Length: 227
Figure 1: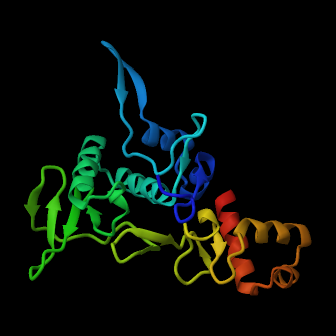
Figure 2 (figure 1 turned 90 degrees about the horizontal axis):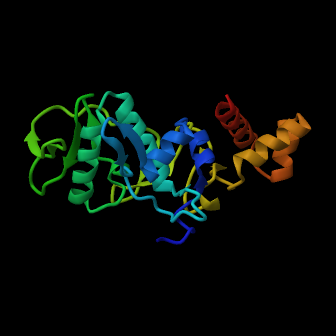
């Protein structure tokens, strides 16, 4: 397991707050679950192995887990079935050699299956149908991963939840991945709490030695999370 420095750490409730995916769904995706069928009980395995080992049976998520939650939810919302999604995830994990393949900047969906864009040297990018691993020649739709910054290896490295033109960022290398204002690294929760107490954004900006824009973006971000 990676060290927490550079991995990020989020409780299930914090992950739910940031992704707008319910806590019970996040737990099911990371821990698996059992359900009743006519012949008894059936178990469904986790969709992927989390970055962090549970502590006293409590699940915690890393930054890539957080992005994977967003991707899985986006695919389900787009109409991809669970059997297709699980098959795509397992196949993509093997092909990319990465434990969190949906964090790669190579996925798109047409609502029926999941496509993976693979670059081949001296050839045009090829689109693989991850449901049955057959080459398909279909136009790739705009990737559903928005406002995510990728490293050179095409793996998610930072998330700008309000967009790149705002100051709020989640970076697993800073403050264990909690939402911060990018230039000065102050947690958005601290800035928003100070504004609630003082009722004056300019004074708060002076206290924390940050810009007024950073304070306002932090307040807006925390308000959206609370909505």
